[in-house]
Structure formats: structure tokens, C-alpha cells
Amino acid sequence: MKHEPPNAPELDLSKWSTQLRKGGLGLAVLAALWPGRLYGLEILRRLAVEGAMHVPEGTIYPLLSRLKSEGLVASEWVESEAGHPRKYYELTAVGRQRAGAMGKAWREFSGGLDRLLSPLAKGVSNDHS
Amino acid sequence: MTIPDGSPQLDAYLEQVRRQLRGLPRPEAEETVRELRSHVLDRTSGDLSPASLQPALAALGDPGDLARLNATARVAARGAHSRSPWTIFATIARLARISLGGACALFVSLFGYMIAGAWILAAVVKPFWPGHVGLWRLKDAHDAYAFSLGVVSKAPAAVELLGWWIIPIGLVVGPAVGFCTFLYGRWSLRRLARPRQGRVDERWVAA
Image (cartoon, one colour):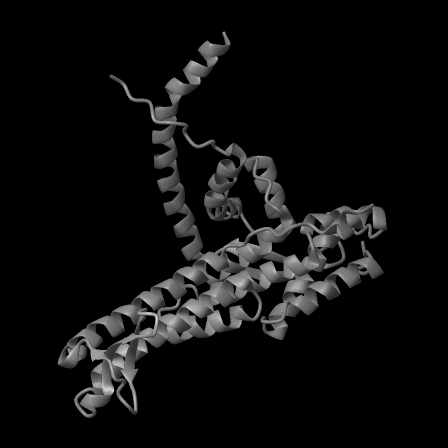
């Protein structure tokens, strides 16, 4: 006889999704800086446009500061054509190495998860057809 | 192209951030404010009219929350990867002045190190002052039990539980509790170094 567990706790999908994104945010910022140096707002825009990650603006600078204190990024003030100086961030050699290693681990994890999830996707499309 | 870099509203916002950045060294606080100013100028493309400025400030959030977020994450990040118990404890003590999480971490750390110190002190002093060192079980008028550990000038009239065993036990338990407290402190700093978004104050959202 099959026993069903009583009342599974309700999943707060948006909270779960936020936690998931938070976990990957450090890697996402390192990845955004991979092609070259960027200032804060450019990093936010790259995360939003290329990563569909809408990071609260107030949180990006503490995060960059943490990455800097870990030696993964370096920063420098540069005079801009816009008329005010901007603080640019770029990956250090250690940061580049770390981003590569984290990216590889992430791809292995997500590749495996994608394979596991593919029957679910088929199930959803069959349900809709 | 040169754009204006100030407006009363922006200056007032940044001044509030600056005031709340206590806990950060002054140059670092000034650099934080300078970077936020640069961010707002980029976001508004230099248009500092109220209509353009308000959404930019609203996106950054309440200045007090923004400052606490920055100060906490920046201070915590400096000690989070240290292997020195003193550096970690000193960082937690600084955080206690600027965040509730830091105050809680300081309370737990102080308690942990006091317990660790009491065990080690008891183990070291026992051979020289045996009658005044121990772990006593005290019983009050309501038959409730309490325990007293350490070195006392007058031994209480109560059962002493460990005798000479307090030396090996103290030398193992004291450092173990101290090490656990160190690990807790480092974990707390790493947790506090991860920025969290505070609430957005309606004052900066209002059009």
C-alpha cells in the first residue's frame, strides 16, 4: 500500500527563485566582467540584459567591495566623457582563474540538472497539448 | 560634455548616506559616497531634475538602509577571510556598532570566549589553588539547580563535581569552545558580508 505524506509544505516559488539567483550572483558578476572592465551601472545592465538578473541597485557596490576584498576584482577611477569620474572594475588574475573554475562547476551542475529536468519539460508540454 | 554633479535633493540623499556610514574609515566612506554619486549621474545621464532623480534614488533605496548595507558588508568582508581570532573578534565588535546582526554576533562571541576562558583558567589554576577552583552544583531554596565554574576566593558550600578532573577536561573543553566560537565568528562575518537589500523608503519614491 502506498502512503502519501500528509500536506506537503507550500512552496514560495518567488522566494525560492530569489535564493537561487542570490547563490549565483557572485559568479554572474565575475562573468559580466570577463570580457573587460565595467563600472557599476554597466554591470547591472549586463546582468539584466544578458542574464535576466534584475539586481537591486543598492546591493551591487557592497558585493563588488566583497569581491575586491577577496582579491577577485580590482578597481580604478577613470575620468569619463560624461563629465564625471567613474569607478571601473576588472577581474584580477586570481578572479579570472576563480571565474573559470566556478563557471566549469556551474555548467557541470546545470547540465546534469537540465538532463534530469527534460522529462518534466516534456510532461508540461504534453499537459498543454 | 560636462554635466552638473549636484542638486539639493541628491546632496541631501548622499549626506544622509554619509552620516550613516559610521564604522567605515573616512576615506572609504567618502569613496562610497563618491561612487554612489557617480552611479546616480550615470543613471540619470546627468539630468538632475526631480523627475529624473527621484526614480534613480528610489532604485537605490532608503539612504539609511543603503549606508548600513554598505558599511556592514564592507566591514564584514575585511575580516571574513582572516584566520586570526583577534581580527575576527575586533571586526565583529565594529559591526556591533552598526548592525543588529553584528550585535548578536558580538554577544554570542563574548559568551563563547568567556566560557572558553573560564575552563582554561580553571585548569591552569587548579594545581596552585585547589580548594578555590572547580565546578559547583548550587541548589537554591526552590530546589532549582545552577552551576558555577571557575576560580573563587571562597568556595561555595555546595557539591564540587569534577575535582582534579577539571584539569584535563578544562584543557580540552576550553580550547574546543574557543575554536567553535572562532568558527561561529567567521561564519557570521561571511553571512554579514553578503549584501541584502533593505526596504525602499517612500520619500525617495514619491514623484
